[in-house]
Image 1 (tube, helix red, strand yellow):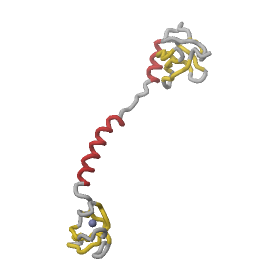
Image 2 (spheres, helix red, strand yellow):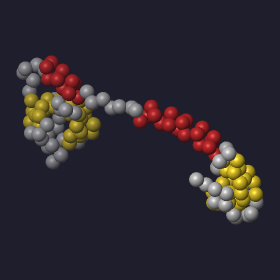
Image 3 (spheres, protein in one colour):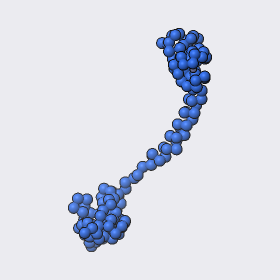
Length: 146
Ligand SMILES: [Zn+2]
């Protein structure tokens, strides 16, 4: 409990800073009057800089509000469903080529990867890379590398 004579941080109008003050007297247990230890001015107690609380409270919710839609954006991985659909619609005579980084693949080629299994070439990104839909996710794979 703070008492008269104790130090308290208060806003000094003369110094224009929150500085250490000495409590001069209290009214109903509330600090009423303080003396600035820096400049010696006596004045009414103010906990913080006037208006500081207001601007901080006004700024923060706005910042949170504008950021929230971006943060809550969820990337849906629907690769398993797409892969399932493609494999079911795949004609039985479709050739499945063993994947090799040295080979060249085209869109809609079906490949067999030793680790990821059967994959469908979704997109040719460059002459050396393709997007392949595997049963868990789409992966960027290399090709045409000698
Ligand atoms: Zn002062």
